Length: 321
Image 1: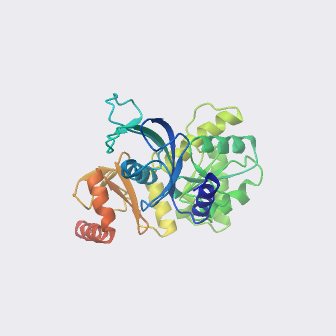
Image 2: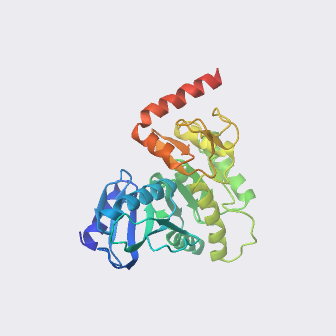
Image 3: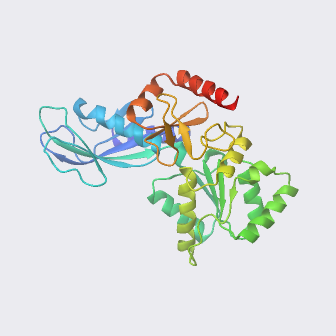
C-alpha cells in the first residue's frame, strides 16, 4: 500500500469518526524486513493496513496501537533482543523473530476521544489550533463532531458561538473569557432557552490563572484546560454529571450520580476499584467508559463486553438498593 493509499484510508476513517492509530517505523537495525518511514494504520479492532515489518512485530504493534487508541496517548515502541537498557518514554518488547533485528516505531492515535473544535478567527484561536496539532489532537470543523469545543471568539459574536456549542453534542465546552463575562453569557443563554444541565458543561475561563497576556500564552493556558477535558481530568464531578445528563449518557464512573464514590470505577472483570484518573486502559462500550487496571482485564472485557456490562449493571442495582 502506497503512502497516498494509506492517507486515503485515514481520510475515510476520519470522515466516519472511526478511531485508529498511525504507526511509523523510525529506526531499524538489520536484519529486519522493516524500513525507516514504513507506515501502517491499525484500527480499534486490531485490523492493520500497510507495512511495518513481518509477522514477528505485528502482534506487539497491534497491541500497542489499540492501547494508544484507548488512551489517546502516543507512544514510542522498541522491539529488540539486543539487551538495550529500556529508556524513559520508550516501551520495550522482545523480538519474536530468530533474526533478532531491532525495530522502533512511533504510534500516533487518532481517536474520537481526542477531537476538538476551536471556534473563532482570533490570534488565540489560531495558536490553539497550532498547539492542538502539535499535541496530536484531531481538529474538526463542527461542534457536533467534537468531544470538546474551545470558544476563542473573544468579543466577535460570542453569544452566537456559545449557543451553537451548547446546542451541539460536544461533551465539554470551554471558553476563553473572564468569569464575569461568562456569567453574563450564561444569563443570556438562559433567556435563549438553554437548560441548566447544558450550561453546567461550560467552563470559563478555559484554563488556570497563569497570568497569560499574549495570544500564544492565552491559547497555551486554554489548551491545558482542553487536554484535561479530553481526558476527563480536572473537570468538576458535577460538571461531568451534568454533561452526561444533558447528552442522555449514563453517569460518569465515580460520579455522585453513579454508584461508586470518589474518582473510582469498579472493574467488572475483577471487581477492583480503578482510579479514573490513572487507569491502565479505557474502553467505551454502549456510550459508557469502562476503566481497567491491567491488560488481562481489558482484553477479557473486549472479548465479551455485553457480559461484563450486564455484570456492572447488576452490581449497580445491588448498590443502589
